[in-house]
Amino acid sequence: MGIYVDKSGLIRYTNSVLDTEQRFICVSRPRRFGKSMAAQMLLAYYCRAYDSSRLFRELAIENDDSYTCHLNQYDVLFFDMQRFLNRAQTPNELTAYLQKAVLKELREVYAGYLDPDESELASALEQISAEAGKEFIFIIDEWDCVFRETSDNARAQKSYLNFLRDLFKGQPYVKLAYMTGILPIKKYGTHSALNIFYEYSMTSPKELAEYTGFTENEVRNLCLKYNLDFPEAQKWYDGYKLKNVPHMYNPKSVVDALLNAQFHSYWIGTETYEALKVYMNMNFDGLKDSIIEMLGNGTCKINYRKFQNDMTTFKSRDDVLTLLVHLGYLAYDEETQEVFIPNLEISDEFKNALEGDGWDTLAQILNDSDSLLNATLCGDADAVARGIDKAHMEHTSILSYNDENSLSCVISIAYFSTRKDYILFRELPAGKGFADIVFLPRRFHGKPALIVELKWNQSPEGAIRQIKERKYVKALDGYVGEVLLAAVNYDKKSKCHQCIIERFQKEPC
Image 1 (cartoon, rainbow, N blue to C red):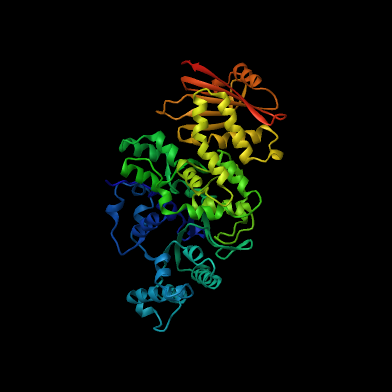
Image 2: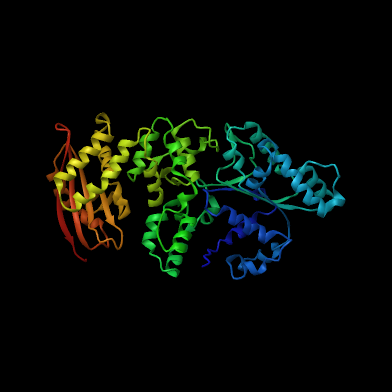
């Protein structure tokens, strides 16, 4: 079964920047998000060694005015940097090996324009450009593998960056340079070694946002075509929020779910939870609290601009969280400048990483969440109060547990397992106010909706009254069926929670 989503519109953009200042493009996104496939598509389109017109037949780009003008018209230098790095004897010899290999191919075509002793690729291309009037398109796949796999080799990294800078900066032979990687371009201090490149990343995708992954309409159409439950696909793989594309899906996971006709954690098979665990355990102030907040369906504001775009230079919590955005473990909201855990697939990966190194207590709380949800659904208010007491005492400092916001965080963590069957909303507009927490059941799961009102050192009876008087049930627009009204109060004197649960039947309007 062949599954294809037409992303050929990317070519429309690259055609528009040929020979302009914007012709230097660096696209970074997580592993298995289609970077190499996009690079191969550009190679097939531009390379004059092919006749690829049939590959683009009936695709979006075929209807663009620029399509025939640039189809198979250029010499393309395609660098698979991972392959070059693997074949070089050492990382320090990467650039020498690459230049030798590429020069060998250039001599087969342009021998009459090259000095037989020329060993510098940039100099050779300058000669060809000056004497033959040729321009080249460069496509570099996995440009950042040197920084990911030789993170402690500053000499190899510096040599590599100097090579790229010499190859591209101020060179008239560059028609287009398109680089892909997981990380944006490496920075030293506040400066980039390749400041001629325009970067399109998970924190700032700009015009290329729709080509980062699968859009909601694309996934909806695929689910319809292959008879897969779209709401379940949303739960598992939606959540990457990019500017102008509020619902971006992981393409690797969607395709595997379609191929296997089963929802599962597919993308994380390309990584291991141990890799995530390394970053979770970094000892920066506020990092652990931020991760706990996000596990509770919360968000955390970050400043990603100080991140040095490597996997070793960490000076703050923000640096670690920014790296997790680029690796795909977190999503970034460009408008609010906040990060969050995007979906069930990634949430499960965080849960798997909560083993040892100070996370055992939280892991136990998350494991206990199934019991807490069952007690809630059964209307056992005393058991719910005891469960929240346990989550509070084992996780949150009493000194910092002093308002409804901290209570809300504990409730969200304690009900962690609800994300499998529910969508959680905080401060949801409802009736004459805002419902503190609303758990709206996903389609086809047959569970009741849940409205939770939180009180600090007041009374659960007052909270139940507030839910009814302010008509919070109206928040469940379009929902029909049983609703559980749960009032939770923390009594400061007894240092215990109190809970009341009532049932309500929401009828069709």
